[in-house]
Length: 98
Image (cartoon, rainbow, N blue to C red; front, top):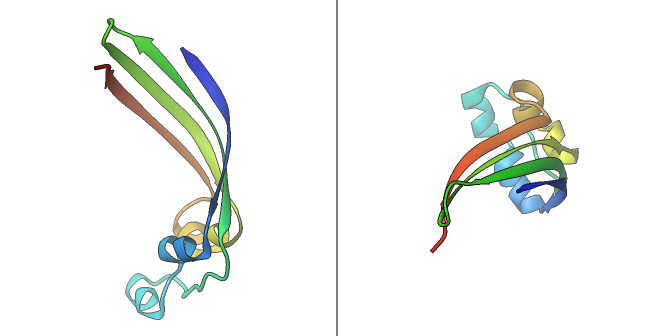
């Protein structure tokens, strides 16, 4: 089975601050500029999965895609200085059906 499609995920200001904000203390320790988040952000993605049935109960699923960070997350020094606003992802899963 093969599937692919887009996705759009909104993250709140509070969540965005916890992942992409840099406090003064964190700035001192890391060397990154301090950064205060004022609002949430959107993550736009496109990905796909492919599942191969090994037996009646077992299957193997591969997944891959790319995500694009916007707004406050994209502008964070965590992303701008040491990361990238375009992020690839992938994985391999072994599935068992009960």
